[in-house]
Image (cartoon, rainbow, N blue to C red; front, side, top):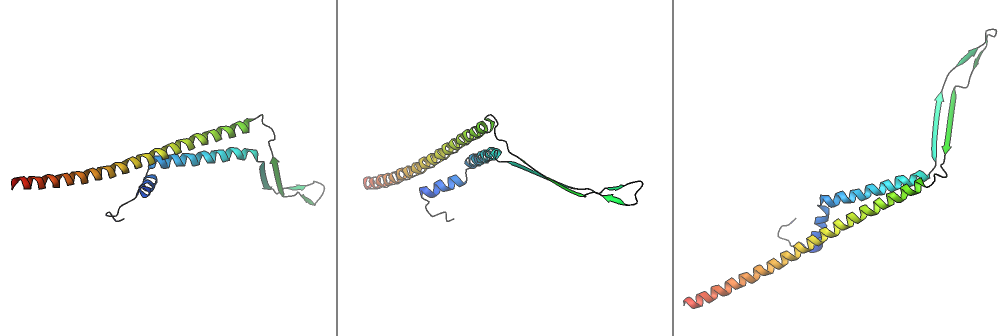
Length: 151
C-alpha cells in the first residue's frame, strides 16, 4: 500500500473492522450460537440406527452325519422419533435463540462502538490538520510582521 496515498473514512472503517481481534471474537461467538441453535433444532428429527453382524455357526446332530448351517449374516435397523417431551426441546430452542440474540446484540454494539471510534479519530485528525495549517499561516504572518518591523 502506498503510504503517501490518502485513505478515506470508509476504507479506514473497513481496515479497523478487519484488524480488530475483539470484534472477530464477538463474530465467532455469534456463529457459535447459530450452530448451537441448529443443534437444538436437530432434536426434532428422528433418530436412525443401523447395525450389521456376521456369524458362522454349525450344528451337528449326533445321529446325523449332515451338518446344519445357520444364516451367517444379520442386519438390524431401528428408527426412533420422540413425539412429545413436555416442552423440553421447545424450551431449549427458545433458550438458544435468546443466547443468539444476546450475542448478536453484543457484536452489533462492539461494531458500532468501533465505527464511532474510527469516525472520531478521523475527524480529530482532520481538525488537527486544519489547526496545523492555521498555525503555519499564523507563523508566516508573524514572521512577515517581524521582518517589516525590523526594517
